Image (cartoon, rainbow, N blue to C red; front, top):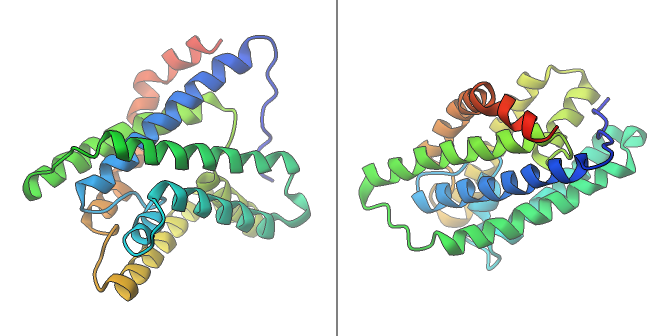
Length: 221
């Protein structure tokens, strides 16, 4: 069963929603930076990124719509076990979508200056994204749709979460690659940077968790 959303009292909600909001903004900066780097975005963002190359919608709008789809998939996977409070993930998806467009606008002057420059911005985006994810997780308030759908399938089919996460990422990358090849004739939004992010992001989040997780927890006490 998907984990319950904790109930906090007193000043705890404010202390936890602040890191959550900061984390979402930092995550959006990392996502935007990876798109502007031009060698592939994160697995969870590669489908909206690929769609943004051949549709008139912004990446932020596509991210929001994609998150709604993920929540719908959660509902189908969990059935009667899906709790209404989990629909709050839609608002989280909306926030991520809006912040992604804001971040893309703020970072639009970025010019990678060649392939090495693209890798510099890709690696930097992973470091920034990892920090944002760490803040989101430590806040322990809401579950993002991208994580929620993995938990839902892991619960429904009794598959360990790490294995389900790998399957989910591979499915998203493959889907984005197929869409990009069909509609653009090339790999846009899915490239070597996507694979790099998929392999390294977990380790980066783990580093931040060990180095800074305790400090963040104390700030929220």
